[in-house]
Image (cartoon, rainbow, N blue to C red; front, side):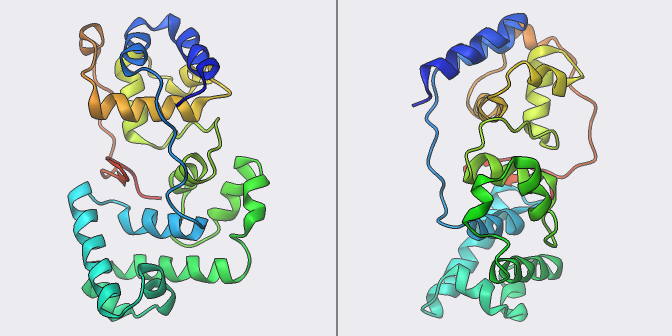
Length: 230
């Protein structure tokens, strides 16, 4: 479960925003799951395939990928490494994403995705990841939060986290609001995703105007939906 001192820090930082603090209290200490993938390339494969997809669409494509891998007595990773464009397209992966998957394989082969990434500051790591075709700042943030467990990343490009923070605080400058939660902004983001997915928005917060509509697609992130490309 979440370290009690970190949880106390979040509650203290939220005192200026009672609806947000109430939502954090309602959620309680959350469990920080270990990384779901053994290598950063595996996480990137998932993020790239799921970009711009709803949860249902992403699940359908992954089911086809897993079925194709099983039929070949292989694994999804091996399919991506083999790079059979026709087969991957048949699974529902676009041509651009096929090329992005191959770029990830190439980057790993070149040594860009080695264990040294874990020791880099997020900005330096993100610059390396964003040099790979199909990987943008949002994807680099997700990798930092969920694969490397960097505790202090604010995913400014994430529609769900930013929108939830706006609704709970009434503030448009969500980056400035999140700054008060440093050095645990990644944990704040995890809470905002949890709140959005599982908890009703407090009554006081519902009175706040929703943030302006952004021309961004919904994003998918396991185990939660709603995300942005890149």
